[in-house]
Image (cartoon, rainbow, N blue to C red):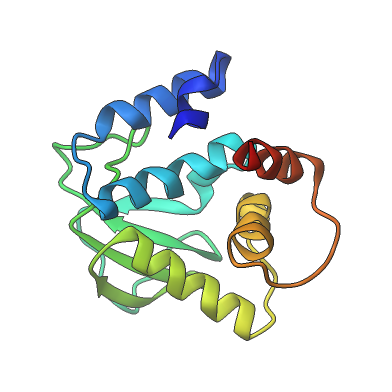
Length: 159
């Protein structure tokens, strides 16, 4: 969280907006904040990965190849600032909702990462740095050179 607060400029404003939405110190709320903030720090475009919808059912089609669908109250969120911890979450794969009724964003992200890694699928282009960070820095899986932006974040965390 300290790294989020130190950032300035456009990235700092986006992170400040996310931090201001977090009113709880509950671990799930903090994890949601980190998962929404990592793509911002790493220069990824999370808008093509995290989608919001008030109602969508399993089997319905969505316009993205892979992502996480957050079921949100339309009065509580806007596309520019989605809820950090939605009430329900689903996983989108190949444009279809394949899992729904997951309890929180961290659970959905873990499942999606696990499926992607175990099946040797390519990471979503819009969140490639975020997935590389999760794999190589957080989980210490695989051995390859980190992209410079991921290496910088790893160094910041080591300090």
